[in-house]
Image 1 (cartoon, rainbow, N blue to C red):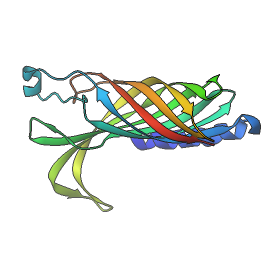
Image 2 (image 1 turned 120 degrees about the vertical axis):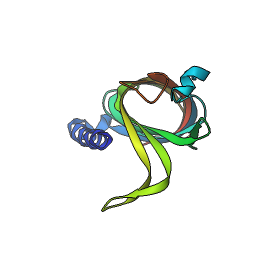
Image 3 (image 1 turned 90 degrees about the vertical axis):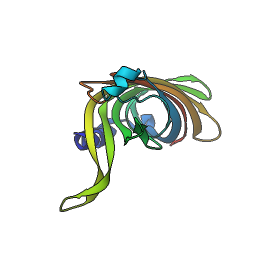
Image 4 (image 1 turned 135 degrees about the horizontal axis):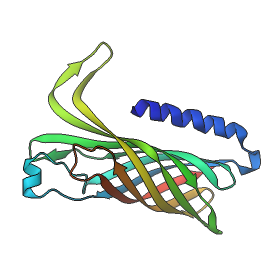
Length: 196
């Protein structure tokens, strides 16, 4: 499912780019760091296998393209920098892919508000001590995927040229989440980017 979201995102990005007026087009790329805030399991919930997205360092890579006035689309890839460990036994790593609609009006000479909402996938890798191989590749993990909705806000603060720093908050909502204690999590962080 995550591959289809990535493919759909890029197809829509290029299709919408063709409809835009040249003077209205611009994009940006960014790299961010932050943390995830989510409920943590109680002792009883932990014994029942509940994982948490709370804590740890989360990294993100994003690309946005505004094609009409202040509206556009974007793709965001977020992952936990190090593996989390459930009950000292099972290492796992959450990875989130999202495709968003973006509205980003200027709010000053060197600032731009960024509002976004979209859909994606929470892909959790559960690591094993052995590899499973197919005809193409070998992996040392299994995955569990959950449909994800997200919405967020950020403020791009421009320095010199197109360089900006963006404090941001993103709320994720997961459907039919069997792996984690909660069906939602909040990522707070900051990104460094370049607008062109």
